[in-house]
Length: 106
Image 1 (cartoon, rainbow, N blue to C red):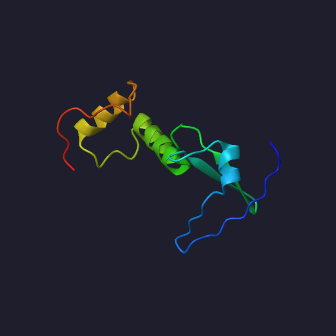
Image 2 (image 1 turned 30 degrees about the vertical axis):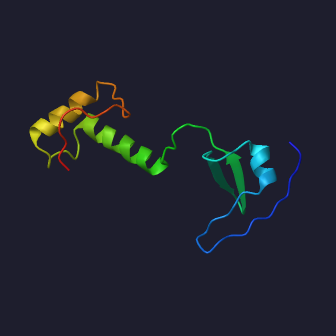
């Protein structure tokens, strides 16, 4: 890919418009997603794939929670039936994108 240098102006809301040559080079159009990666003092802009973004903090928290459930630690304040259901769920594969069945109270 040839080197392209373009300048964009930051708005008061922290927004920029990707210059047309950059959009064309990345192959992005209306509705496309772009990724921003901070590498030292530079920001690298790339076309984002359609994969779901995973928050590393959430991933770490869920891993910690899974370890606690597997070991039975720090579950003492939960009702026994909830603890048992959580431990039983460890053996199942869960589709997080599936529709929720039944009523849900929030």
